[in-house]
Image (cartoon, rainbow, N blue to C red; front, side, top):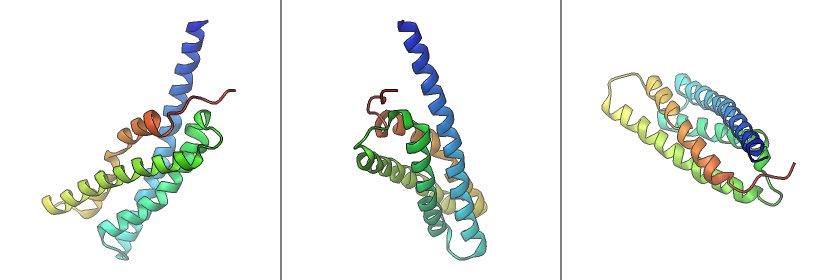
Length: 143
């Protein structure tokens, strides 16, 4: 019986990681499309374009993780606490992303767009760990 429970938990966690990756890819593509579009159009400079992309991608990411990736961990009455914790993780990731982009812009002669894409690609693994271990850490809902 214990091995069956471990198997079920492993299967659930593996599925969550896969879903997290899919949502993360969609959020990253959203971030890149919005930020890249604003940058390429000349509407905003790199850091402002990055902020706009982040804000749109935040809602894609939170919604996907809350309603799909970690839906098995969702509990009644935890939505506000969960979104606040996710916001902290997300802002931390965005600050890391922006720091990397700023360093790229200051220290390299390479194109701004390449720096934007590089900075966007760095954060997802850290975000998964923080989301799973802290943001969505309450016990699984009964099924």
